[in-house]
Length: 467
Image 1 (tube, rainbow, N blue to C red):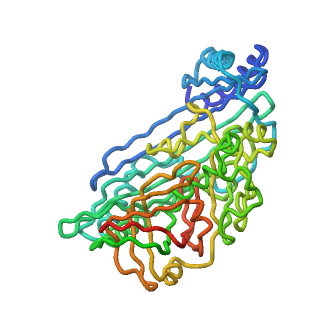
Image 2: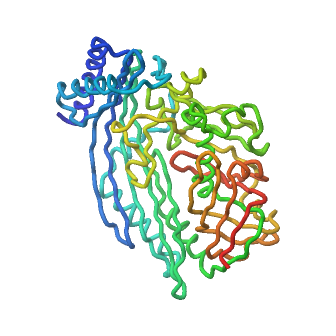
Image 3: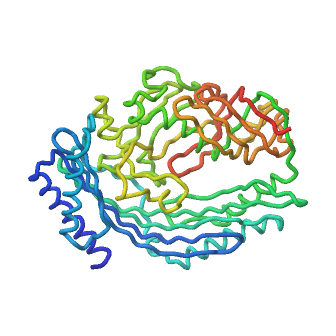
C-alpha cells in the first residue's frame, strides 16, 4: 500500500479497534495517528553534510479501565490489522496492571477549530535538491559578511504532517500541516581568538524561507562579538533579546502554569489566580489559533479544539494550561494543551515531536508575550548601566525559578549606548522576580518553536563579571 492508502487503512483499523476495546471492558480509549514526510539537510563546517528524505507512519492507543488505570502501546506496522488490534489490546492489558491515574479523562466530541495558514502545498512538492539549495545559501550568506566568519552548523527541514485522533467518546478529527525550518550557527576568529557561537533561523508553515536574511543576521552577530572585553560585577538593567527570553524565562513561566504541576502542588502560582505575578505591562497568552503560527493547530493531541488562553493579563495571573485529565482533576476547563512535543536537540523530534511513540503531556502551543511599543534601540537608550543579552546558557530551577546563566552573546551598555561586546560573565536571579521587575517591552517579536516573544528590559539584575 502507498502512503495515502496506508493512512485510510490505519484510521479505519483504529476505529474498529476502539470498538473492540469497548467490548473488552475499557472505560475509555483513544487512538492517535501520525504520518510524516520529512526532508532534512545538515550543515557542518561550511559544507552541506547530509541529506535525507524519510516517511514515517504509526499509531498509539491509550486505554483506561473503569477505575482509571491507564495503559499505552504503539506500533509502526500500519498494513496489518491484526497487529493494530493487538496493539490496542496490549494498551488495555497494561492498564489492568497499572496504578490508577486520578482524574484521568479524554475530551468529548467537539468541532475542531479552523486555523489559517498551516498548510502550503509548495512544502509538500519540494525535494531534497530544494533543501540542499537553501542550505548552501545559508552557508554563503553567513560567510560573505566577513572572511573571519565560519558557518559551523545548521539545518534545513521541510515536513508534511498528517495527524488524527479518534476516541471512544466520539472525537474523530484529522488535519494536514506543513512546516519549514532553516537555521545556521557559526563563530568567528579574530586575531586568533574565537567568538562564542551565534545562530539565527526561521520557523514557518510555508515554503518561503529567506536564507540570505538568516545567514547575514548570523554573520553580523558574530562580527559583533569581535574585541570582547571582560566586565566587573554590578547590578543594573538588562535588555533580554527574544532568543534569551524564549528559553529560560519562558521555561520558568511554563513551569508555573502547567496543569500537571499545579495539580501536583509544585507551581509557585498555584494559589495566585487574580493576583499580581508580573509587571503591570506584562501580558502572556497561549495562542493555538495564531494564523500561520509554528505551533498552531486545529486541535490538541487528544483531539480537543484549539483556542487562545490568557495566562497573565497586565501582570495578573488569570489561568493555567490544561489537558483533559488536569482539567478534570482541578474541576476547570480544558484549554486544549495536550501535546506530544518532544523538546530536546534532535531537529526532527523538535518539529514533529515524538508523535505516536509518546503519551501526551501539558505543553504550550504558541506562548505569546504581548508586544510593547518600544524599539530595541529605545530600550537600550534608556539604560544607564547594563547589558544587552542576545543569548545565554543555563537552566531554570523548577519551582524556585532560580536562574544562573552563562552569557553567550552580550554587550555592555553605558549611558544609553552599546560600548563593547562582553567576554564571559553571567546573569543570576529569580525568574519570578524578573517578571515583576520588567520596566519595558519591545515591539520586535520573533517566533520560536513554542513561543512568540519580544525583547524585555528588566531592572536590578545581578551581573557577574569575568574579571
